[in-house]
Image 1 (cartoon, helix red, strand yellow):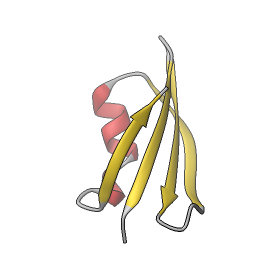
Image 2 (cartoon, one colour):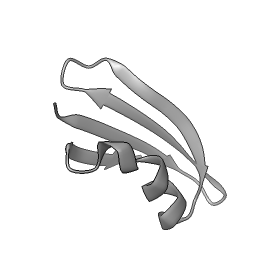
Image 3 (cartoon, helix red, strand yellow):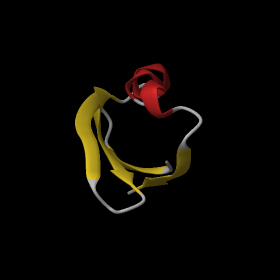
Image 4 (cartoon, helix red, strand yellow):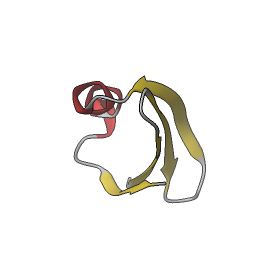
Length: 55
């Protein structure tokens, strides 16, 4: 399955939303705005991420 990631980035926190190909929300959460922390939150979908969008 392919997943699409939406990121709402601010200085301190990043809100994350993972949506599947059928537009169903699979997971949503918040991370500190650090690449390593965001990457850790998305690790379970690694290899299946189709696109990452930031707003």
